[in-house]
Length: 320
Image (cartoon, rainbow, N blue to C red):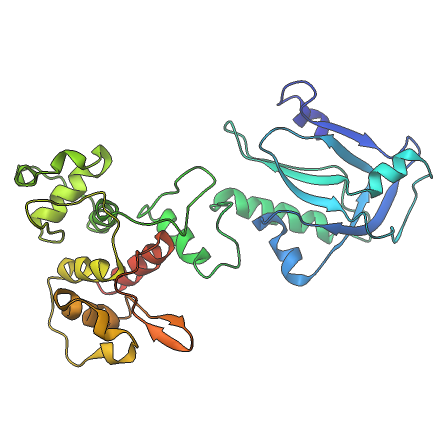
């Protein structure tokens, strides 16, 4: 498999060597140097022991490849058949045992050795299953599998509400713009066809990105997105209280009984124009507090992140 895979890359980009011509197998400790769904189950279980038949290792890997598994050079091998010599030393010294490559239209996972024998089959089957799952999910390098927003990121990308900022990145802590929020709600509405000249009323209409123009026009027509002083500010970042107001208008500004804002330590910092919206979002569980020093804060003037928006969008859908 490695020989076949090497032919996919330029000469010398992928090179596998063995500890020696007489080497057979080894059971030893490994490390997982990068976060990946492929190795996630092993990390979560604290399983840092791997069997390999072939005593091989990669001495060169393609640019952009992610190293999944290395031998742990700080530990001795548990057992195996590897003759002493420079090859054994190179094998033990943090050698690369597995990589993944997702560039140039390829999605490849390669191990330097066969992982099974007749009495030790779990690893090969588990890694194949993990790799298959990873291939059909969104393995964003900046979304850790244990992150609180990992599930919601997958959900909004799967449903087309949001996309990554790159093939392997979601930028969960990045800010969100007003036109981005309008676009996500437009997608929830089914991306209806729109036409009209309502955007001409705003002095900064030219600032709207082409990819967001239909969505912003829809949001203005539906009174979901409002401007001020003749400007729509499409590229401005959205604060949490602005998100509340946009979600509230998207729901036709329903009346809310009770005051859910008393549960937030900083409720008095919410702008008057956003209080009804914030109360509605809080009562429907769309926007929840941010814990700080033992208190729950609405953080109304804090810029919303992409991870927060992803989570809120799923809750908005639940209110439909």
